[in-house]
Length: 296
Image (cartoon, rainbow, N blue to C red; front, top):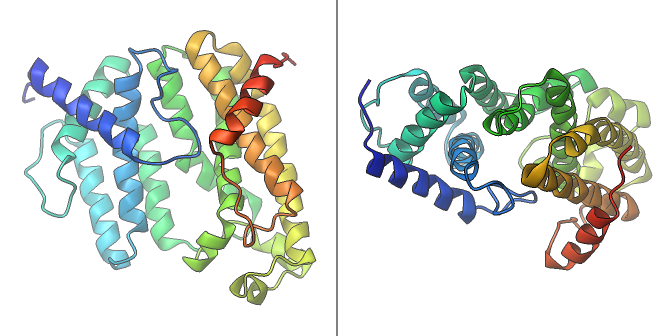
């Protein structure tokens, strides 16, 4: 394996930190609340996943071109040796994989978790509808849950119970993002609500085309809200079991996700008229809830 010098590895991690901080997200990524030793590793994971997610969502490319980009990204993940430059890939590709390889080795991360992420991104290209909750949750298992497991491993936690609780939180956050972005996803040709629920409630796609949140769609989303709340509740344990600054970050993330979900419910799930998002004005309420946090 080609060795990476200390100086070049430091530059690689710095590039990943810049990428992490340049992208807006609802939930914290490599924030300053995390222990300092964790931040470069989390940023490397984020940079890898962010780039792959961008490949899947780049509308100006054909499906075949996007899948080819994801395959090239997967090839670099599986290779122990740096591969030749590829003009199709981001300029920071070399830095991302130098940092990621170092993180995988030093933190003992299974490559299978990253392959799960890539399989979900490929599915974003090939799959536009989901028939059942089982299909939706299987997508969450690969698109969101690996990130939580990786963060726990970076922090040194190897515990099956924590992993299961983390999976629940990550799936809940992913679902919250789906309901929050229902209108935008529909305009891009995607729907993550199970089709059998839509048919059961008589929800018409024409209403989504027109940007109308009808009672039928409200019933579908109310049922989805119940599933999501249950996952948040099942995942609360990881927020309470992990100590220190990471535990604080997990509780803030949990509270932020629940706040978005609660706002959706109060607005009657009308994401067309008012897409809920967290902003600076939400910080005092979330901090107040954090101070009043009680173990269950």
